Image (cartoon, rainbow, N blue to C red; front, top):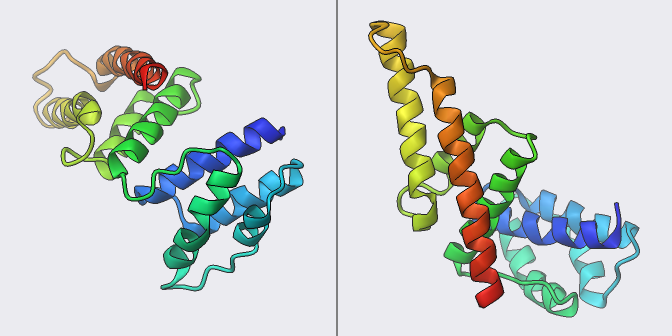
Length: 174
């Protein structure tokens, strides 16, 4: 892993942790990967050495993460969950477009970790998850629809493309 990849992984992992889709151990592991890739800073060393203890792992990360990110010129979302949600939504959309996850895995993940209460950017993907569930239920029970769950895949892919473009454009403006 290159230093640039390790830094991107650390930032992404921290964003996933912020919304509850990664653990403190994942963030510590990403910090260690940075050190292995040749990235170094005093607070990154401390972060990589955090030994998450059940119940206090989030507090220990919060104590060091912001300073480590500042030293590394990374974006730290802190308590701004909307920004973290937008970051992970972009990462997940890119995973779909890179074909490392399926459209259904994307909608299911968004529905579980972002929900309607989160960033409005996720709304259409959550609607598509509901559409998958409806089509599966109607097709399985009554076989009264010609629509198959796979028919929704193109809509999910189009939405992922839109999200990557929209979030990237917003990042360039901001």
